Image 1 (cartoon, rainbow, N blue to C red):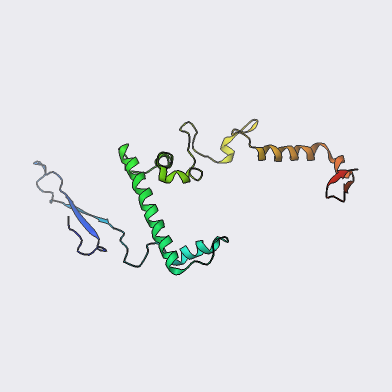
Image 2 (cartoon, rainbow, N blue to C red):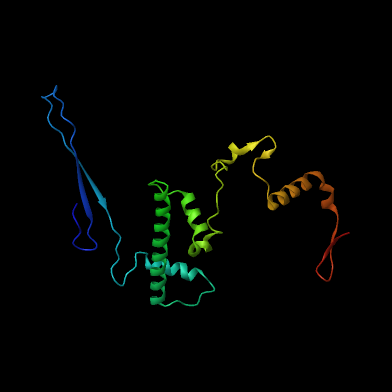
Length: 188
């Protein structure tokens, strides 16, 4: 393994896999396979951020409550965001390694958000998934005889009630609606 001379250099490892030679096939040439693994280390230059500055400015300008932000403040926000992402990613990787996995899963993110105090504010953004709940599928696959298999929400009930009302009582639409002076409406 070679070590990088500069912080921005790539670390390159060469692995040689030599197959075992068999005694009964001496006529085959010896083959070696070489595979290069490149690990790119993200290092930033002093005074620069890994996040695109124009993107950070667009996000800051999208918030109407935020006053005009100086260039230096946007840079510091970008650095703080990098540090936050770094810490979150490290915690999530440790969680996956504890379970002897290389791949990070959604449940790792959700568990870190629940367990760590510094990521508790993400609780509403990263909802906990129950292991009993099946993976999300297309709506047609979830439909059964009575409609949807998921529980109905208040909005679903309201929309369904309005659809049922439109089908059953078209004569109610013919009634006169009177607007009172105080802004209330009554059916007349």
